[in-house]
Length: 479
Image (cartoon, rainbow, N blue to C red):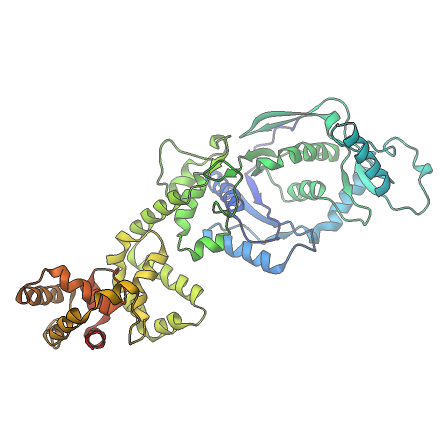
């Protein structure tokens, strides 16, 4: 058995997550590969929520997945499809297979299945179900006993999967047992539901993780027995941690939501995720426009990719520097409002701290790797007086430096121009008169104005704070 070559129909792909949690990094990359392929080929990118596991699924998880895709900029065509709502259609397909003789009612009990499993373990052979009901006369069936519907899979020959990433993969049919397609409670199983949904949605290419490769063989059999054409396959490699082990939370296997809260930009996430398994020469910096132009499933690597948070951070720093100041500011405000939940930051933005933060963006973007660096560097803007000092700032503001600041304050009052350039000139003049190097004045100023010893350029800080706030903070520090 072989999967048939598709027609030259327009490309239609899908992302089909199970709503049991957030949009994790592997799922995000799968969605990105599908989205890029649709964009590259002028096709459609559809979204299906595989919500048949009612106990584990939740509306909150669905919302988190949709939110994660939206944040990543992966827009889909049409409305998301709910697999659960299509259960009647799945049962219809199962009944067709049954009516055509390509499936059968199986009355095996849980006790009988357990005995089969124990026998396989005792004989140290792989467990597979050989149901006696495959060829048994249905008239022998117990009257009102529960039954499942199993696929009457071919026993001889091979099922061949021709895969854009994995190459040609052959499965001996004798190793693929008659899988259940409809449970005894009437609920459809995963492999049947996926085939029916992909067929009805017109999916031409299935791009998903290599852990689904065996499912492809089972699904190809269902396609064939239903008389439907088989989509093209592309089973992409898994993502490993830097140590080569399976990716876990300790490696960075977090949700898209977490990366947003960590201050990463969607364009950087797209750039990084696509490089986990796909490449274009030695190019590291890849704009979304170039990705759409160059991406193809035939150039996805077969070997597992390794997740490296340092590389992601470096790429994010590049895209921060490449972003426009207004665009960065909008991203910052959006993140601040998302993180603040009505606390002092949100109040400060409402009170007018926004323009001050915007004014700092050009000075901060060259040294920031994430949006959190902007927030950390700009939090002095919404700090309330009297300013809290960290330990280093506290040590820096000793009796002598506080006295020096007290002498400087009158020099700064009523300057004809309050700008970074004018302030630097005035402080330099003061330092020379005090016979001090500029740094010996600038560092205590930084401590007094920001509460830390690390900040954007101090004269930019003073200019953004404005004369009144700067003088008030310096007076606080001088006492």
